[in-house]
Image (cartoon, rainbow, N blue to C red; front, top):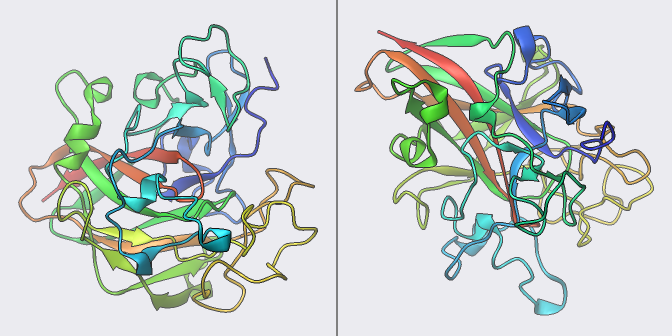
Length: 317
């Protein structure tokens, strides 16, 4: 059982400090985007990037504009038309903050016992909102202000992401729902985003973001395309012998050196993309003060997976 969860992690929000980041020790530190978070109720090691929904897909036809695509099928075939990113926000998630292992009801559903699952993760892990993470950091934001948020990649499944807020209900974070987060999707502030190496703001490389609020769920919610292209092969570069995409990329990188899968099969879990992806977010000026949860939702295109992580936020006037 101690081995379950050692499968390569994939992605997580890293700032503001997430629930899994005890005392905020990892944050923006280089190479810590999928840091180990220790034991999770007997499941052994599980990194911060192992909180997700596995085997989820859009129900109807794609609604995403083709210019926002991140993975292209070979031979003219659209292999990824059911991937969550093809209709951002519409695919089902088990939890808005993620499930350890991604398969809470077994693989396939109804299977008993905790096992490694085909297609990723493991079964019967806890829901993040039901787990008592120790020493969670709460970040204070001012209502109506512009704030920074970051995420990092280990396995680059393309797609795109959104940040959302939910006011903590009377029963606490156990009562938060995806529907609550969909009522307050945040908009990005400005046209630029950046990558940053570690905690050094002077290391930033800025570039124009690709954002959309067309064909998204909830209607009009704003999403940003993952700016880092995976390698041009269907595996995204997982089976490459070296990082850097020597065979080309899925789309044009925003700047030199900003491309890759994020890990290699020869060293799973060892990050090759040593930066965090930053955005400015606009906090609405009509929200009530109080305790909130910030949910980061990454809808993938290469895989039928959605990755979630959450942070505790205190909104003040």
